[in-house]
Length: 261
Ligand SMILES: Cc1cc2nc3c(=O)[nH]c(=O)nc-3n(C[C@H](O)[C@H](O)[C@H](O)COP(=O)(O)O)c2cc1C
Image (cartoon, rainbow, N blue to C red; front, side, top):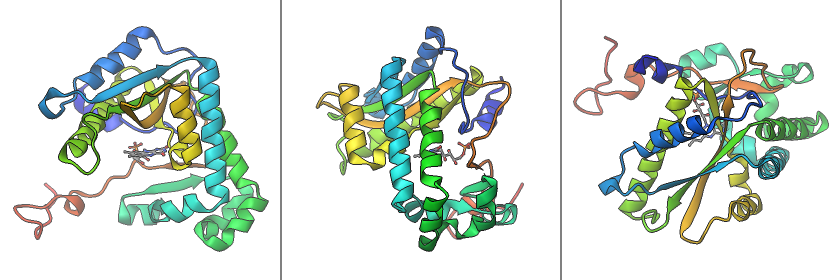
């Protein structure tokens, strides 16, 4: 595939993957792509764990689903992330950032806009939305043939110091290389982030992966091959919009937004 086409096609996969295991060859290509990222003084502070064991994937899926259910039920999820939610194409067209919630089960549709308000929490609980989202999330993670944990070497990752910042930049670039390579390989990838927000869940994942004191667990992803048909989850969003160039690029100083070519 053309390089720019790969960049333009890179996206987050919200839906299921095929059950087919990811070939060792492809796993190693993803890891090679990660290792080709730049890092300060070529320190390569990233480490990865490839997780195929069914019991481990199942347990991480349970932790992800339960964390999602808890975050939604307690109202923390919408409270934290409200600024990023868009509810109409018009709103999305104007802001051109955030995520557009464009798929909701029938009974919820009339309440689309109220969903984020603290008052709506009771309604969400009555409609069992936390359980629904938790269960969807659990299934998506459990049905992913490959989970990938990204870690940093604590000798380099020292939060608050420049090397901590550099390590984060390096890991971000390594993950982007993996993400881009999934496009070339007909695969998809999604961040499994909810367990990070529940300290006990995160601690259990560290135990499952036997993360030593010398490493920091930074993120977990689910990966797999994309199915030809892409059924959408019951509650779903899209985020393919991007800001116009003048909304994020300036010419010579921060005072002059860049014009369209
Ligand atoms: C730091 C970071 C955290 C993210 N967290 C999540 C997440 O928790 N769940 C998820 O599905 N996507 C997550 N994403 C993916 C973004 O939602 C996604 O990249 C963005 O909406 C743009 O969509 P695209 O990747 O399809 O272009 C995250 C991305 C980044 C860089």
